[in-house]
Each structure stands twice: as C-alpha cells, then as structure tokens.
Image (spheres, rainbow, N blue to C red):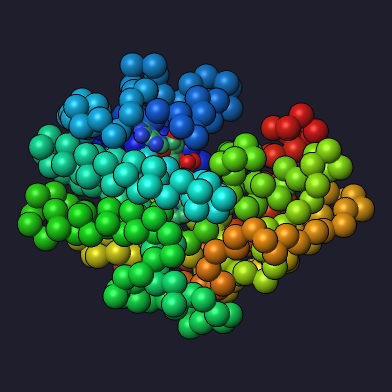
Length: 327
Ligand SMILES: NC(=O)c1ccc[n+]([C@@H]2O[C@H](COP(=O)([O-])OP(=O)(O)OC[C@H]3O[C@@H](n4cnc5c(N)ncnc54)[C@H](O)[C@@H]3O)[C@@H](O)[C@H]2O)c1
C-alpha cells in the first residue's frame, strides 16, 4: 500500500515508519521537523528508511501542502501535531490550539478531497475531563468518559476536536476512520531538548547530565500516569488499519498508573549515581491520575500492553545516554 505517515519523523511516527517499511509498504512521510528529526528515519545500516522523494518537508498548517502530501495515498496515519512537555503546553496554549486544529482539519480535508481510503487519527488521554482525573485512583477510563468534555489544556481540547472532526467524516461516509486514544507514550527516539521534552526523557536527561543540570521533578511527584511503550503503540496502529476502522475511538494504555516520584526513583537507580531528588511544587504537574480500561482495544484489535515499565525505561535511559554522548 501507499501509506503516508504525517509526523513520521517524530517518536511514534518514526517507529511506525520503520515497521511499515519493513513490511514492504511504500511509505511516505510529511513533517516540518518542529520536533521530529531526520536521523530518526535511518535504518540499522544508516541508510534512510524513506527515500528523499518520499520525505515531504512541509508545514501541515498549510492546506495546499496537505493536498500535495496526501495525493494518491491508500491510507494516512495522521500523527503530526504539536506535542511537548507540560511546561510548553501550558505556556503556549493559543499557539498550540491553533496549530493542532489547523493541522488536523487540513489533513483530514485533504484526505477526503483526494479520496484516501483509510484515515487513522490519534487522540490523547489529556482529552479526558479534568474533574475525572483530579484525584488519586480514579476508576479506569472508558472511551465514553471523554464527554461531557472539559480537558485541562488547549492540547487536550485540540486533540479532542481532531477526534470529533474525524468522527464526522466517518459518519458521513467520506472515508474510513480509525481513532486511537493514547495514554502517556514513551520510548526511543525521544526529544531531549529542555523546552520540548516530556517527563521520562526529561528525567533521563537530568540524571545523565547531573550535576550540570539539577535533578528537579516538577510538582509533588505524586501525580500518576499510565505509561505505554512506543512499541505497544505501533502494534495498535498496525492493528487499527486491519481491524479498527469505523469502530469509534479505542483507548490504548495500561490499567495501572505509576507516580512521577516512582519514575524519578527508577531513573536515578538506572543512572547508578548518588542523586538527591528535588521536588518543585511551584511547577505545574497537570492532572493527578488516570488509567485506561483497554477492554475495547483487546476486543476489537486483539491488543494488550507487552513492554513493562522497567524494561522500557531501561532501554529508553540507555538510548538517552548514548544520544547525549554518555552511553
Ligand atoms: N507522546 C505521547 O505521550 C502521546 C500521547 C497521546 C497522543 N499522542 C499523539 O501522538 C502523535 C505523535 O506524537 P509523538 O509523541 O510522536 O510526538 P512527536 O512530536 O515526536 O511527533 C509529532 C511530529 O509532528 C511534527 N509536526 C509538528 N507540527 C507540524 C506541522 N505544522 N507540520 C508538519 N509536521 C509537524 C513534529 O515535527 C513531529 O515530528 C501526536 O498526534 C500526539 O498528539 C502522543
């Protein structure tokens, strides 16, 4: 199949491109490298996974660019959006809202105009209502718990609106639509830049660079997330194209959460160094706790999480250390 992966140079996208290319699909990538990197798209032999003529460096806020990138595709995995850590998300809400709404609406509209058969969209657990995740140990979320909507951030709202628009297109029979709603994804390759990194790579960086960078955890450390390894996400993306089209949103994530304090302690243990963990309560910590009821993913996709947090974290830490020249 001719498959376009938008955001294909990013964390999830580059892993998906690797999987699809390995299966012999003709894979295309559209990315503006806001956070993705060309080096993530190299094979084991350092050769590009995607030839230069299939790698579109485009800004998907531009509707014409979306039309060009989606032309002739059998399927589009739409993964491009502004994604970053909590600091960036709350400091740039208007920018992020507008960027994501434009990207999602343009890509979908271009897929409809170009008669792309199948469109896969990824939503986020950040779209669940803040009141349902503002205390510890809430019941695992079911897909329908996302409404009535009141996400905590513009990021959560923008991603939910992307789901909504995709559902409308599916309901009107414009194309087949598959929607996965992902919990907190981690794994290599990941962004290490202090401004844009998410919590696991940020903590790995702080441990690796310690004491040049202080090991400070944002918030109390009591906030909890349902972390899911990127390999498990790629499994779900592959399955959705086969079995998950026109099934509504399907949640992907484990039914147990881990506190950021536990993650920090595990990262310090992996570093093998004597690092005192500091907590900065003046920094935002986001929602308190959330987990996934993944029974729909099991039933529709045959999906289950495979990579446990200790194994996934160790591999991610090792990748970060190599990437920072300390491996
Ligand atoms: N990482 C997570 O924890 C998580 C959780 C839930 C959902 N998601 C969703 O999964 C998708 C992929 O996320 P990721 O973690 O791989 O993030 P990522 O930042 O690694 O990938 C997103 C890609 O989109 C690209 N991009 C951003 N703006 C663009 C634009 N205007 N034009 C073209 N490309 C642009 C970036 O350069 C990047 O390569 C996103 O839609 C995200 O919302 C991620």
